[in-house]
Amino acid sequence: MTARLVVPFLPPRELSPNARAHWRTRWKANRMMREASFMLARAQQVPTFTKARIQITYVVKQRRLRDGDNGLAMAKGLIDGLVDAHVFKDDNVEHVSYAPVAFIVDRERAPMTIVEVEESP
Image (cartoon, rainbow, N blue to C red; front, side):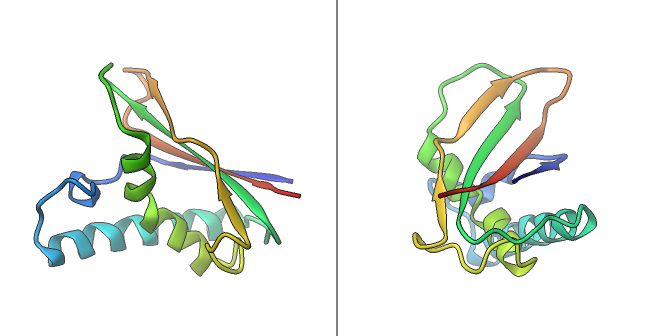
């Protein structure tokens, strides 16, 4: 069983672990991402997974070096929104594992965040 969510934007820069944003700015950006993934999961009626593997892919315009672990940290709000939508019970290591974050350069489709959730053994 697999579910695919396409968020039509990238996480805001304020969510980067390297950002020096005010806590309230970070909170608002995280809340926006959380609500977006919650609404998409509910609208698509994503099933509940007992154990899941998450693949996050960012579709970007520019080819440059990007840090995968920062990309995962920026997706925290997206993952929390999936927990809120009951896609999985919790986002701890007992219920969720993560594939390395991928970056695709595609000027026509960018910006976009793709979250793929699949059942994990």
